[in-house]
Image 1 (spheres, rainbow, N blue to C red):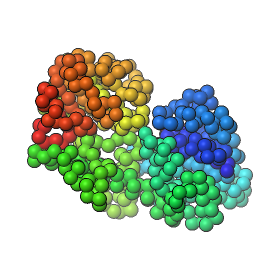
Image 2: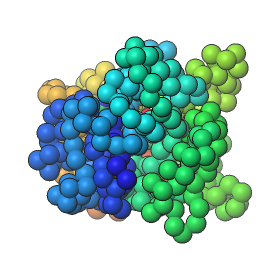
Image 3: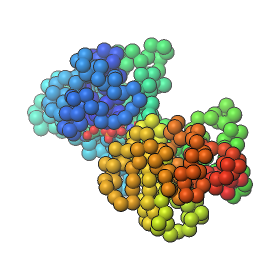
Image 4: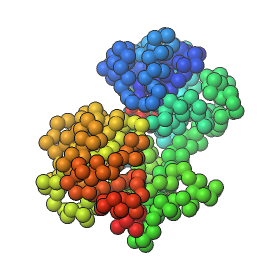
Length: 443
Ligand code: NAD
């Protein structure tokens, strides 16, 4: 099938590459001409495991193309994906300006029936807005062309985006048109062979499903962080508690790790957006507000431990930081806990020596050159002559470090672990002051 994808970001590029791989003819459009040019030269603008070879292969074989010309995109596909960003507005609600801009573009150039699929995470009622924008433009053009707007939220996880798109756990489709459902069954058939993963529902329910999913996951994390904070007061160990409750099949082991807060481009903004949606319709979202508050506070846990150990004034101190991305296997630093940590340390006069396996360029892009940030080439280099080690991301390569080498490199054997990677008892025995999240016995 001929498919157009507007927005070549984490969602758009991965989805486009995976659709091309199964044989669809995919045209990707982005307003960012530099990104388009880079892709044409084989440079992949983001890091996702498995993405680069998939993009290169399908580009070379002609099933995946890139352009900054929206006209080309609108002409190409009967199916038009909207996969642009929906960042938070000033008040936290989802800003739909990019989504409506794409809707307008499609309406300006379309000359035949189009099925417009909304992959971006958008508030309930957005499909109606997209429809209204398209109608308005078509009316102004004085043409009468039919079109459908479908909600098709994306559930991929950054860091596993290619695998998630190739084998989705579910494909949620919000439509009231059985003909459109048939089109989408054909589009997604290659991903739907083992069993039917397509869950078809009305558009508003599909739009809400995406927010409900992300808010549920964020709730699990904030719940565990609340119990972890309590465990510190009570002298209990959240890691033991986690295993204790995870063994209940109704609870399960997934997504119940305590830590220094969730980040990324989705959870913080989607929790905020659902809070605003609730407020706009006159409902008080008490649980969601608590989820957000707990997470904001949790990002300050490591700076608080650092104050407890070193005092408030950190002038003359250097901190080794392992992990900049908001989670492993991605270079994405949007809303990452590491950013709050670094900014707190800088406020108090400290120097940061940071290392991340993938996010170094991103850190450079965000912070540029500053005297109080050194981006180091290896995790070992980051440790040299630092007063303590701080861990913000649970990359595999941080899980079994050479503790003796860490001890030797640091000025003092102190570790602030925001991801609970090590056994506190072992760390004490090896002579470390070890601060982790919710491991009461360790404080
Ligand atoms: P992103 O910021 O990585 O990419 C968005 C792209 O859209 C950018 O390249 C931007 O230049 C482009 N763009 C903006 N306006 C455009 C226009 N008018 N025409 C063409 N391109 C345009 O965003 P993302 O992380 O891929 O997220 C996209 C949407 O998917 C968001 O709504 C997000 O909430 C949702 N989502 C993201 C994830 C994730 O893990 N990143 C997962 C599920 C859903």
